[in-house]
Image (cartoon, rainbow, N blue to C red):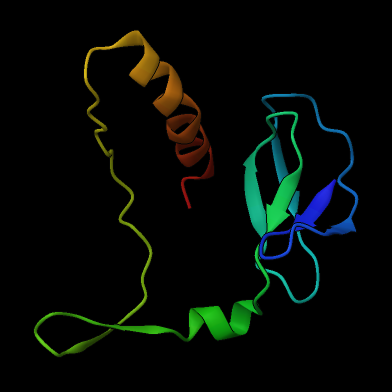
Length: 101
């Protein structure tokens, strides 16, 4: 099921992908989402993509910088050597690695 990320209300259906597979969800008025399916409802965030891509950030040096993508390089994620922590962090790392956008 597709849900509004702000209200939680159902806004559409997601074809039933298998758990762990990559899916893509787009709906007018929401940011597109590409992620790994975890067998749960998928939340879309209400915002037009054209608005979001025109955002700018102002840094601590008071200069304005445009939004950009991360460079295509490896990112190391460090977590304490605790099985519970690793289990909690693993899904987020897997999802980020799957998108690579």
